[in-house]
Image (tube, rainbow, N blue to C red):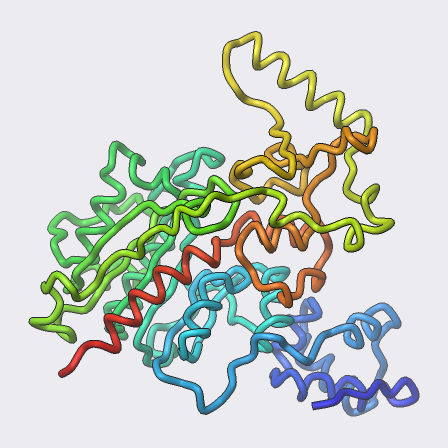
Length: 422
């Protein structure tokens, strides 16, 4: 649908843009970050009762209506939901395989904007505020649930932090909707958290083996705690997969947990050929494969080149760590470097985990560009990376998944689904 800007009639301009995006008044208000009475404000704009400030009108006009990854109706072979969706890295491969996303939840307003720009859908907000009965039926549940409490970068509080309790929101939806399969993703450190007890609790709940109640000091919603009394019955498998083993030059390791409903798959589920983990390609990787070329970077190198002060600080800290006998500090890569360190949500601050050497240009190192971050996470070239500020998009890619790894897992999961004969 072609969108025409109507400067002389902003009310039509706003209405056409909202309708082209397929958004309700409330969703549209959230997309452009209107606070209180956002729905009423949008209605007033569209009726011509009042006009938005120029900066808001400009923001509306800049919204992309041609989402590159909108679902093509008629292609549906299974239905899935996307929880803690971020910018849609887990969604992409499942949609490629013929899945239709029927529900999305993501609370971060900036991630919502990037998601809407790329998929043409506005995610719903805080999953703890959405009743299970309001979530559509689906075949596959996807969730990259919050990992900060289990990671080296976080405080490792696990279930004693409200972010860590988000797993139980997944559990209560599994109880209510009973999807045929699920895919959960988290940091590698989940395996060792609380000497492995946290992961064991998660796996036991998914398999229906838990007997002990979660302590009452763990902050759970009433619905989530009530759901714990109901047993699931999934065949569950877990594996740590590394991005560099799937053709992406990043040393990113993540825990992937897959589950298959025994009540649905029945006798097929325990056969050796029912589900096989994807085999890593193990093709040698090279950082140069994700770097923008000279033409792409033309006149933009200095935008990402770090300052003399920041570079001096990086070198000083690395020298101090070396004296202490550890390897902490910045990481410098070149085109021929095999892979980078793991990109994190803090990358926007100083880029220390991945700096690109520019000594051949007699310049300080530079940070990755947003496009290079997208490539480092396996996102397609037409994925929109400028729907939000540069700082926010760095956070989003640091928090995201490696799409190439998810794609390999998704192919095996959907193969199991398609091969099942009732």
